[in-house]
Length: 425
Image 1 (spheres, helix red, strand yellow):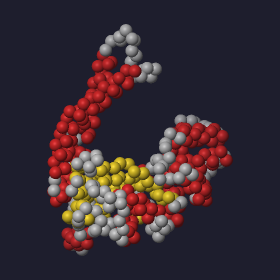
Image 2 (tube, rainbow, N blue to C red):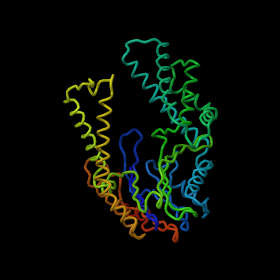
Image 3 (cartoon, one colour):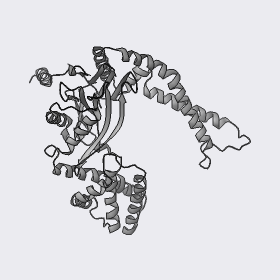
Image 4 (cartoon, rainbow, N blue to C red):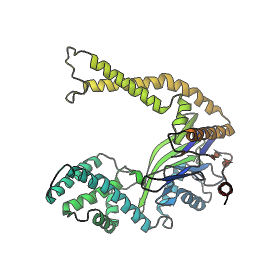
């Protein structure tokens, strides 16, 4: 986990990011947390544009730091009218970065993704079903597997296509990596005789996995691109989920965007470990707010259960044949949550955001740093969570007149030397 924040108004945008990165053994066991990670990057001192990353520290095994810095060299100060054009150029660079992400790397990552998907959703599900059977024939196993895959495909059909992919991208991936998929099938289904229909169904899954707007947790990182294009007078913030590169296409989607001047005159946007920042802005911890809303739903349910049947003969709340009461109780809970947000959260948050809209640029930077530092302090004090947010905090200020300016930027070499002295190296 990480903590990053953007604080912006019409004068500029301040970005702050912590330095913690978690390295695990890959099996969910031991992990080590370092506090020297780079998550906030400058494309050019002259450009009011920056890139932040969180979630995964790399893309397909290549550190985001390397990818962004190589792109910055390629960009060489080139300017675009809009921030969206910077984003498109950045993702286009990744698609053509054969030296960073060669075909062999793309093949290896595709095999890993498909192996894990087939195993998690098909093989493991089949084994769980078979565990309840004392003895089952081979044809019955094939039939059971076919039913599992068919049900999964019905779920896939409900997903929309990924916007960045062409209409035949999934099929193109399937054909390009046909041999690699055969290897995955042999490794995973060794000893299980697959019919031609099952083989075709498994390949159809591959088409869905790359065509549809869906990301496996092992296949997703997060990228924030912030700043202003030449034709944009006020700050813009674009958020993306980024997957892997296969057959010349990078899978990504825009998840959100914020524009000063259109959405608000000032705003605070946290990323990663955002609960503490939201608590300061809204006056209540998101987890507490959720529990209050759920308590309201439970109260409405209890009142409904105590009510005697009226002339309309309302069924019990949990009766599957009539969801009328269930819908009414859920609506009462939603109404309560909306009421709390409108009457408590918004009146608390609006004055703070109004103050943000009036802050000078240097105060934007101070606020951004303070929000991340406070989150790091609370994580350090916590006895129930790992310290996945840690100082030092990198802070940058972006504006039309000054471009990209580092307000605070850790010296990684100095940090390493400091640790060596402490450890007696």
